[in-house]
Amino acid sequence: MSRRSEGGPDGIAVVDKAAGWTSHDVVAKARGILGTRKVGHSGTLDPDATGVLVLGVGRGTRLLRFLTALPKSYVTTIRFGLETTTLDVSGDVIATHDMEGLDPGLVVEAAREFVGEIQQIPPMVSAIKVDGRRLYELAREGIEVEREARTVRVDRFDLEPTEDPLIWTAHVECGSGTYVRSLAADLGSALGGGAHITSLRRTSVGGFAEAEARPLEQITLLPLREAARGLATVAIDDELLSAVRVGAVLDPDRLRLVGDGPWYLISATDELVAVYERHRDGVRVKPAVVLIS
Image (cartoon, rainbow, N blue to C red; front, side, top):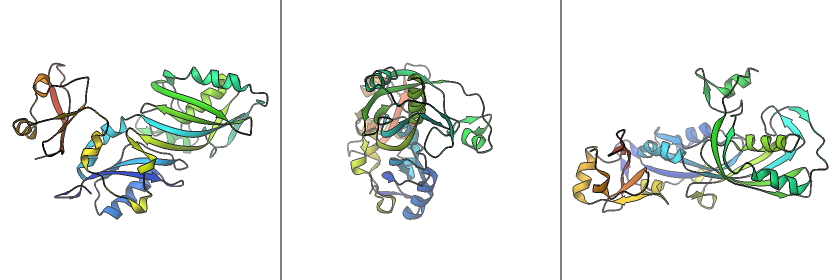
């Protein structure tokens, strides 16, 4: 467990969310277990979905926007031939299609068209706000509104057949903001019919994988340093630490930065002390988060 700040524990937790829990439910329960209200999650999982949910605790909540932006991977089950109101098994069936003669080769080929940067319309059951209201709130009232397509990135969309020719297992690796249920529904449409998902499990968030995820009752905290796992880190000396401590805007050359950032600054004692990103002038870098005082 990471050391405690004045207001309670600090750290990162990797939870294996159970079915039936909302992400907010997990956060609320974690607050009680850890004895602090400073808990947040890094990307919503639907109540029926299971798997990796990364929490920020204490000062870790200040890192949530970076954790949310990490790529994610999923395993899902797609059922062809039926469309539902929610694009998953919890919704009402609104259309049926005869897809019994679905050619396995065409399924695999069609899935390849969804790899890369694609346009995706968020489902009505998503948490995106339109005119100040969450889409899922409107959906509960039977209201459907027009949504603008968004550019998302899919790095992997591999499908495997099961014994049922209408049910396939899919492995998805994608950027933040991608809706797997929409991916399945769009694949069904591309094949001349429709589809929805019947199960969804998130298997990783960035470098946090399901192998280390723990049930909520067994929650443990990793050090804040783990938020930089597999990402661009920069070791700084005590002189730079003094500048970072007061939120200094710096020349990238002084930090020997490579790439586009964000950059995670690590002290001589191997602590994560700040996250830097490009300044608005594009020439210098500034602190997005400073974790020391």
